[in-house]
Length: 301
Image 1 (cartoon, helix red, strand yellow):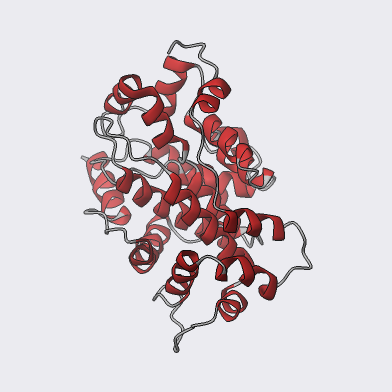
Image 2: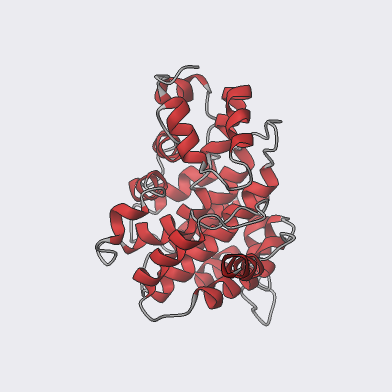
């Protein structure tokens, strides 16, 4: 592959797996606001695997219902159509991603990072009073979905980039742009559109590296700012937070006297502990707030 490799040609040759019919049907139903829990329950109940995932999700400690929910329609009624649709969508994408053996790349670590970023974006969105906070959660979860596919298709070249990231000392996107002329964010946008995901999702995924473009007037695109800020969270494998100063600066412009960085990260860590078992993900060895405090101490010495 050379720097002028066409991203669309690369992804076309990769033969993207098809989304499950249940996920496609949920996306179709979401286009009509008249559809309610009864309509959304039908494709979920037609997929036994998805039914089990949804009920496990709704009955998790994340929601904390006092009684067991055993009915999909009731589950949708209790937690909302958007929440269930986005959970089903992410579960579908989660199941389709390849697991390439590419240097230090680790699929489970990627999903751990994705879940923390999704929870962070939703927390920021809820603080800002955004109605689409659940969509921010899903978009932030999916922002790096192109990485496993790129690692599989580009083999040694992409492995070199992953290794060149040096545990967060260099940005993956900078290395991608320098080597190929495009980034995994652009690739994610192409994949999202190829799967006919909502255009708003594709745009949030595509723009998650463009924080500075929105910080001059963060109130105009608060959702994009929330997702782009989430992209600056450290990876679970990182021993330091190289992007911390940039993250803090953006966070303060957006939150304007709201919860402190530490308070938000503590909430993300707590939400992660409750959500992760649903997706069979382990807890990272170091929490976000621990890494944040460690990075502040290092900066002060």
